[in-house]
Image 1: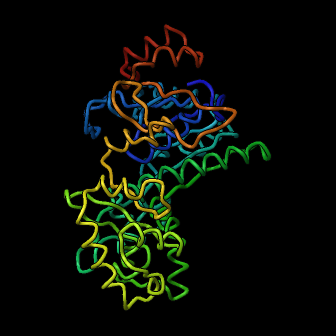
Image 2: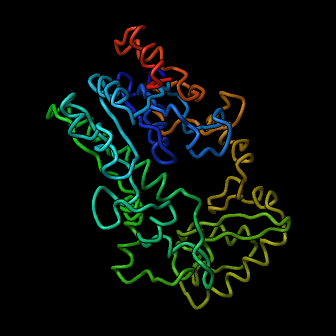
Image 3: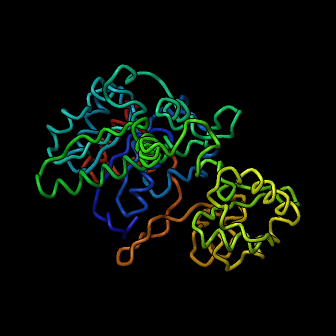
Length: 381
């Protein structure tokens, strides 16, 4: 990919799942030259779909190396000498055992930023324990707050720990470390733990809890469905609308649009919330979702239709901003955020693991003969 604010930054991404590829996608979307180091044998990799639909792998080239062989590690370390960033998502100690841990990489390139993505962090009693988004959320306290009262906590997809607390935090950490290199001339290790990232995303509610205005009982707080003016409602056609009318002026527009009498004096009277919710529920069920969208179009009532993925891409606002792209004939979110002077180029199709091994290794100074010998030894593919 050319263009973008990270143009000229070379990143090595040791192949992983979920949050790691998300970080690689973010860096690539912003213009970095991200090279995925894939496995020679992909039979043991979890695959949920055809690789051509792997949006998280877009915009990168792929080199397939066997990092269980010393020759493969030597190839990787030779690439490290020219790279700005390397990041991996293995359990603590695995990279060191294979031979490309931070110390080995620093010897080859003292300016290298070494990113480490794990669930629990590089140390601590759970450091080497397996887990997924839902586990990190559970121990962060965040999962307890998600869901309806009297029901089990609801997994919020894998958005919070994997992508927000993991991939996004890793991206921010790498960018900060790259900026610091310009001052110190030295790289450093970025330890991104999804458990801690998820906890950090809950910083505001920790503050509210400390202030005594947040409870551990679900659906009893302002932002967890406890307030009738911040919730979702079923419509006549069995679809939903989302309401977020927190401020008094927005609440007044909501009530007017629903055709209800003045309720401003009772907006923050919790004892009235039950009656208010019943009124909202009854009125919203009298029209379809799209009819309500028309009622509140252009009105600052903070009422929105709850859309499917396909509907979201076709919404007039998304269309006007080109918020979704179809570079390979299927829908995917456009790069974000946007940059006024160094815009990223449209993302390229995901590479098949190992498709670019020859070209990339030639660029890194390996001879054709050396590459052929590595291939014959099944070190690369």
